[in-house]
Length: 112
Length: 113
Image (cartoon, rainbow over all chains, first blue to last red; front, side):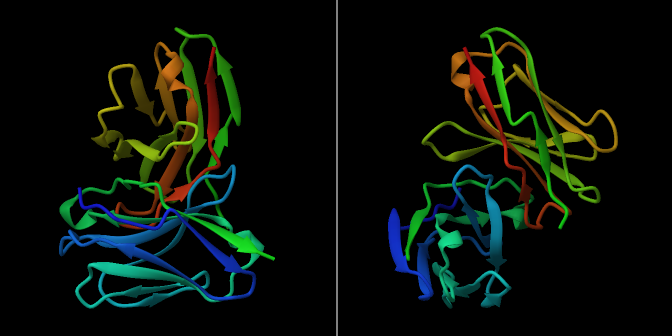
């Protein structure tokens, strides 16, 4: 399985932008880059995903490097509710596998 | 917004007993999944289910585990003879198609005594 590398933890001030990095140097051409987050005592929650182009939705933006070996999740204005563990996951649906392989993720703390 | 619901929120069971965890996926979804998270550890994939059969399963999903979609709305995970190490949060998820985002429930906390 292609693996991802994320910092263990990050801090952000409330209402500041947050850039959460992810390295995935062994990504294959058919792997989608997914981001999920897990708030305390809740199940994982989908945030955003992409293949090659940058993506925006109401929650966040995803910037994908041209060589696809890294990506960055951007939260434009962090709120206290954004404090969670953020997971960068490679999903190999192009190869017929839909399971999500979670790593340890990045624990984001938001300071009021 | 439609959501995945799981019952019960907390299940306490004696070791060796059978337990059934229940999930109601989002109604028009076709793919269903179970994951588990042992306290303080990573979320781990157990099994995926499509078209009334298992499509993928992990090494964790041994003969003690089974899944079923007994009617058009429920999706269940059965553990035949529970062990202490089965204590974990169990998350159900569903997706419209396999390559679409998965929507997770808030989990069932299973405690084996």
